[in-house]
Amino acid sequence: MKNGQYLTEKSWLLCVAIAGLLIGGLILSSFMRSGDTTFLCSLASSKARATAEYAATPIQLQAIVHYATSRIVPQQSLAEISVTFDVLKALAPCNFLVFGLGHDSLMWTSLNPRGTTIFLEEDPKWVQTVLKDAPTLQAHTVQYRTQLQEAHQLLSTYRSEPYCSPTKAYLRGNYNCKLALTGLPDAVYDKEWDLIMIDAPRGYFAEAPGRMAAIFSAAVMARARKGSGVTHVFLHDIDRKVEKVYAEEFLCRKHLVKAVARLWHFEIPPAANVTQGGGATGGEWFC
Image 1 (cartoon, rainbow, N blue to C red):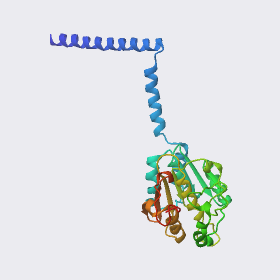
Image 2 (spheres, rainbow, N blue to C red):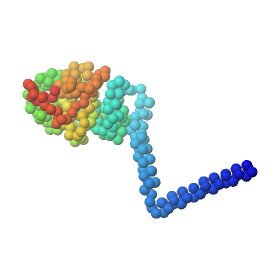
Image 3 (cartoon, helix red, strand yellow):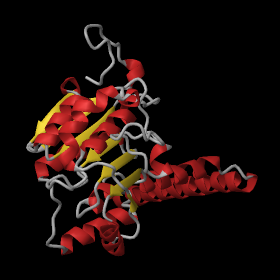
Image 4 (cartoon, rainbow, N blue to C red):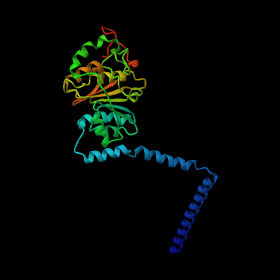
């Protein structure tokens, strides 16, 4: 009796399962016959979106292979890189402008997947060398109008030029202000930058361009921002006198949010969002 009852119950459960499968199949086929595949398509598209969101981009895969097989490492330390990386994690994909093309360029591009990352470099031969191994990088050669030996004079005299003042300063075609970078590609002028990294040009011998114009121009770009949020500006080699003095003049201590080793991180709001103070300056200068 027990065996007979067990077989009967087993057969009943099997019939229920088969019936369920048949009913499910009929319902599914009716959906497909009627052309109502919206639900199935939505499931497929959701899965595709999730896969695309987390899938590595070609540039990221290239970066992994490059750094895994190279003995040359980026100039910045892990602690310094992490400062910018934390911002990129929060904002990417975003617009990232980098002064300098080097061994870390592939890394910066891969940390901004599906964003726009552009590099500005003074040495055309070096651009060709880097792009030979990483042709997908967006890099442009820039001609600077300054020399490091002029840093003190430029800082002492720029206030006498109206088009160097924060209320009138602009970049494209501003030949009156020597600190303004007038020869940048349109791709730089026509975009608002969420992050700006200043790790170039060279600034360690008298005839080098120095970073005076890069710092000034970054400040002008940040202040001219029309979109929401601040512009994150990262300045490397802050242990050098010119970088520090120009940072305090144009990027402003009040906007400094983090200092790690030789890197300073500023968050600069648009000028339209800043209430100009009174006093001797009357809001005529950057800080």
